[in-house]
Amino acid sequence: MIERLPAMLDIEASGFGRGSYPIEIGAALENGEVFSMLVRPEPDWQHWDEQAESVHGISRELLISNGLPIREVAETLNQRLEGLVVYSDGWGFDSSWLSLLFYSAHKKQAFRLDTIARVMSEHQMQVWDVEKEKIRQAMQIGYHRAGQDAAVLQKTWIATRQNQSQANKG
Image (cartoon, rainbow, N blue to C red; front, side):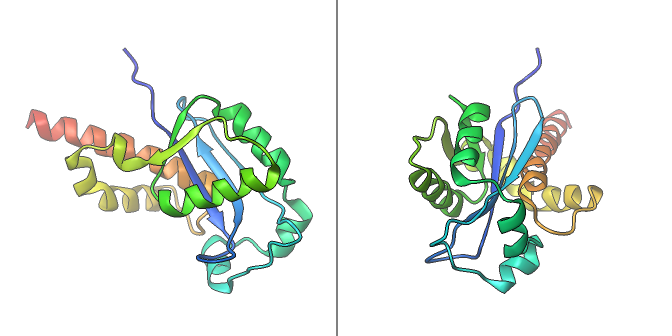
C-alpha cells in the first residue's frame, strides 16, 4: 500500500512582524506535485524588509508586475487544497499571513493549516534539521522560494521517515 504524503505549505513574506504580508505561497501536494504563486500586494500592503528580500530574492517590483491578485491566489489555493489538512514548519507566521490573504480577498479558506509537528515522530523531530539541510544542498537551493521550500519539507519528512524505519530495523 502506498502511503499518502502529508501536503506541505510554505509562505514567503514581505518581512516579519506588524504589517508584513504574503508575497509567495507554495505547496507540495499529497501526490508530490509542487506549485507556487507570487502574490501582488494590495495597495495598503506597504511593509517591505530588505533583509527578507535578500532571503527570498523576490523584489516588490516583481510582485507588482508578475504577482497574481489576492482573490485569484485564494481561489486557486481553495481549488487545489480543498478539504485537506496542509502542514507548515512556520505555522505561527504562515497561519497569520494566510488569514490576511483570505480576509483581504473576502474568501473563506477551504482547507486547514496545521503545524508539521502533528505528523512527525520524536525521531523525525530529532533528525529534522540535519536532514533538511542535506536535502537543500542536494537540490542546490539558494534563495528561499515557497514552492521549493514546500518540496524540501515534504522530502525531509520522507527522508526522516525512512531514516526512522532503518533505525528501527538496526
